[in-house]
Length: 256
Image (cartoon, rainbow, N blue to C red; front, side, top):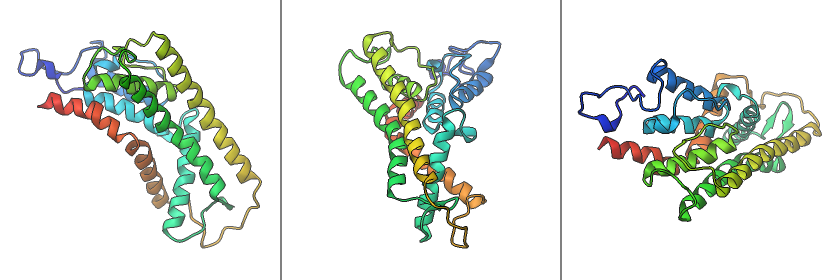
């Protein structure tokens, strides 16, 4: 956000992107709070996220896609535990071990529940975004270009992540937005809670096997890197195509 607004390029007014920001906070503090408020399901803002530079807006979107920063805040803790279990499963298969965590085997039933809880996010967000932009008149966005797609994507991502912030150039006080965002919010709360509860019940009912030299250690730096890789691959690559069509394309178009 300390980069100049592309609209002011070459003008005497060129400087940090202060559109939509309070001067008392400035670009740096506003961008910092924008990052923290989307990482922690806070939703309060001290500047207009819709006026962020394209990559600044992309950063806030990615914070909500991951929804497990700082070990997960609120329901984000569930997401982090799901990523951890998925990392155990993938790491065990890569080294030829039977997947297990804390002495309890991870079998097909557990992996299906993990997939249900994790895949509902891209399916719901991308499905609703595609519907809103495909049907004329539904989106009610203030920008028909790349930024218009970012506005729609942000609205559904914020609703799913229980965040509450938004790109407020979007005319979202319509029956379509009220109903579809309520659907995203409800399914984004209950499915990621109910599926892990069922998973916990399955794991709790299993006999605990003693830890052996063949067990995958989850307290090592190597496993931490593996878990980070799983989070980045799943949470970010699932949304990379729509990010490329939205904020990344907007950034490249303005840069040219």
